[in-house]
Length: 190
Image (cartoon, rainbow, N blue to C red; front, side, top):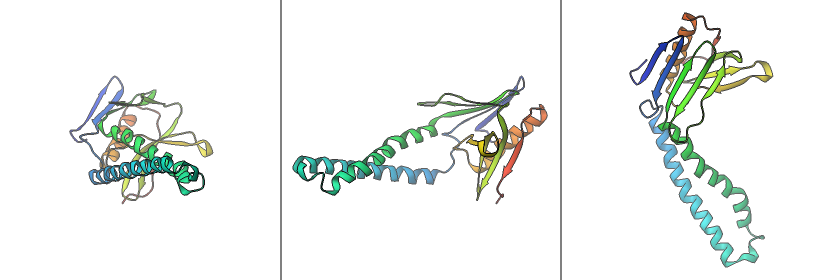
């Protein structure tokens, strides 16, 4: 693993820790989304101010015109994105820790507005999968089977090479410590 990802092993528990600020996935993609978000904020504010200005000047025509449809259909979605995208980007500032033990896989996020730790009990986990999608890889925790199967992406901001190394590190640890966890790879490697 690269130096920005710390791997420790103690008392039958594997701990993998990294800081998302130092291990970024795609800087250009993130920059494009930030620019799009800034434009969305400007457009949403302009549309909202325009709507309220039209309500003030001609309230009787409101129900007959396109303004009513605009506020009912467009504004809630636009404001949802304006408010939720910063929360999504705040995850790029978190530190993340994955702990694998004989009983569970625990994913802890540390930082502003970070959610509570997610615990996947190994008794309920059917496998850990590395999913290849074109040229990107992602690690998933698979729970259940058949129509009751649920796939949970384990980490979000790590690049493809780091996701693959994370998967291989957990697989080697599970094999060394006889942890009853199945591993699988989906898709085709580039």
